[in-house]
Amino acid sequence: MDSSEQWYTVKQFAMSFGQSPNGEPNVMGVDTVRRRIRDGLLKAFRLPKRSNRRIRTYETLLISETERQRFIRANMTS
Image (cartoon, rainbow, N blue to C red; front, side):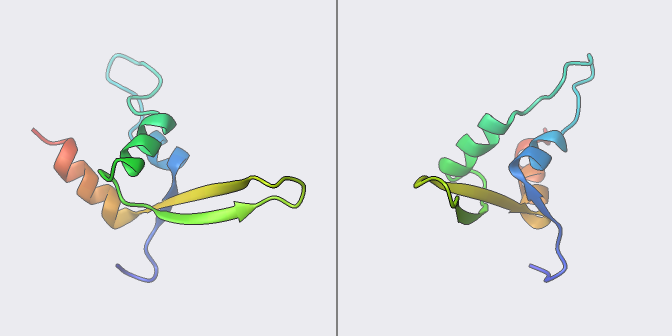
């Protein structure tokens, strides 16, 4: 992993797959990406964040460019 490597949020990762050929909005959604991370099919860097107003802890997930390329090779090729 390179120190200057590009990192993507879950939303950016989902949107990077763009539109399907028939013009539908998005092939993969944010929920699908989060589920694949939770199931271990996709690796992500987890950053816990805590709000000053609420007790709940939020989680920011970042996906590296290397992991994105690995995911495309493993799942998007025939």
